[in-house]
Amino acid sequence: MMEKQQLKQILEAAIFAAGEPVTVERLLKLFDETSMIDAEQIHQALLALKEDCADKVYHLKEVASGFRFQVNKDFSPWLVKLWEEKPPKYSKAVLETLALVAYRQPTTRPEVEEIRGVSSSSHIFKTLLEREWIRVVGHKDIPGKPSLFATTKQFLDYFNLQSLEDLPTLAEVMDLDQVAKSLGEQLELSVNDIDDEQTLTTLSQTKDMRDEYLTEDNETKDMNNNMTLASITENFAHHTMATVSQQDKLADDEGYEHEEATDIENETEKN
Image (cartoon, rainbow, N blue to C red; front, side):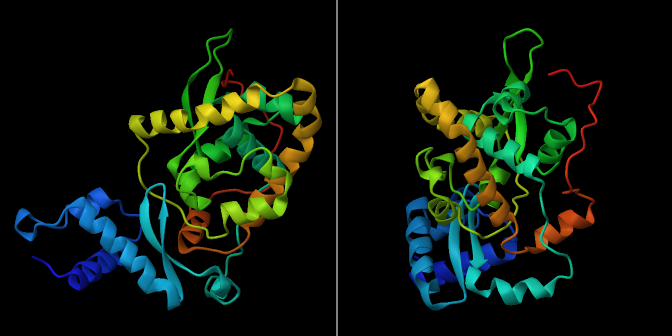
């Protein structure tokens, strides 16, 4: 039987080498039957590995797509100088739209526009779709059948979340400091594909959150909407500018645009 120390070392090496979050299932495939390693042993080894990182400049973090190593945020003022590119800056319109999709998913573009009080350019949703922070999960059964949008694993990974349950509640978002603490500041992207199973998981995880919101007193919701949206948007802006990852650098090289969205409508898009 493999010794615990050797198992930890193999897992540590694998997570470092992967360059992206790695699931327990994927780590389990590293071992053949003769190794007699099961998922529980890997879980225990990962917990021990987390403890081993307590005094190091990096730590082991579990996000939606699996486990990854992250440099402690205290070092970001120095590490950011490794790249010439500045952290991507997103327009207020993009961040507001992302916040509303995150909290009201699955939701439509008209519903987002109703809360924001302004029309949303098709470029805003295009930016979020290209960044793979949101995806179309269906169409609402009303005239015009507008697309229903929900967040993705990439969204969770980028904002350092393991699941949608890690998002602060609607009451907590009134306190910006609590939002910042809940979401964290480490930036990285996942390159994992999104499948139907993940979509169903996303919709399931948001059901209770959305039901709770929809059953609030309408007058209370109207009074809190602007403050809540401003708080979430402010936090997302702070988070996306907190530090720069190498994957952000590559994304910028590929031509992602983060300037203020234009008001040009896509005539072929019918929401």
